Amino acid sequence: MVPNVQLTREGMPFEDPERYRRLVGKLNYLAVTRPDIAYSVSVVSQYMSSPTIDHWAAVEHILCYLKGAPGRGIVYQNHDHMRIECFADADWAGSKDDRRSTSGYCVFVGGNLVSWKSKKQNVVSRSSAESEYRAMAQSACEIIWIHHLLNEIGLKTPMPAQLWCDNQAAIHIANNP
Image 1 (tube, one colour):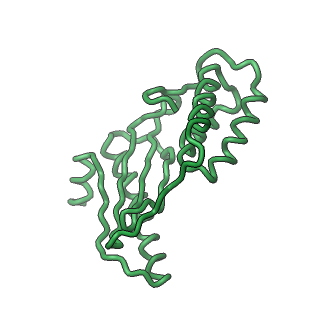
Image 2: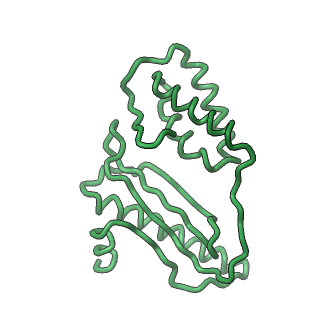
């Protein structure tokens, strides 16, 4: 996706919506093995019912990225620790269509990325702190699940895990419930 470009439902309709649907479907299938395009593909797939020229341009941008980045992947390294760290973020009312926020997090074990998620929140948040706090709550659930999974397979992880957030109000709420 092009940075700082917000796709909306408005715009000139794309002349061949069936072609758009087929290509986005193929990209969706490809995103299973290429997590670097997963978010961009999920955004363009939201407009499959009535794509516009801007949506098609975003799909073409994804294709150009894929052409220029063959064989990309995630490289894991052996670090001397098994600490769990998570970075959570949210964009408050980021969707111009429905004003809902998008939460996201990345979980690292021993300095290696093992889990990530980006999802539009189910409700409209009234403040950026509420939106960020929801992202932190989702992240905490994932941290607990990963901690239990690692313990189950015999890998002990030092607790507590670290959860990073960039919103001062959400951090204050988390520290003083």
